[in-house]
Image (tube, rainbow, N blue to C red; front, side, top):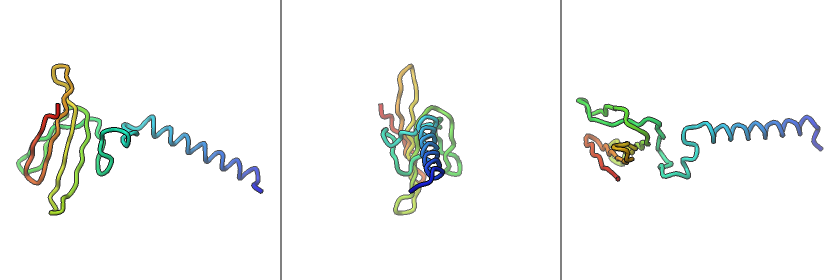
Length: 112
């Protein structure tokens, strides 16, 4: 039979876990990513995504544009691949723009 101190400890632990879960759901930038269109594996949600330009040393130079997400990975040949999708508001229309960066090649696609 459990002592009352053990019961109080279990109840307090349960309440702390509930508060932590609520804090995560309501105060993180994108807590429900698993239920959205964002890819869930190997991605980073970014509040202020940047536009990308290729610099002199083949690195990406960033300029702030809007909201979006970025995914990066190494392919089987060891080439770094990065995909950036961001929302941009032009003339009161929301546009989704996707950038692909593979090795030394940078390309972009306007989704809508």
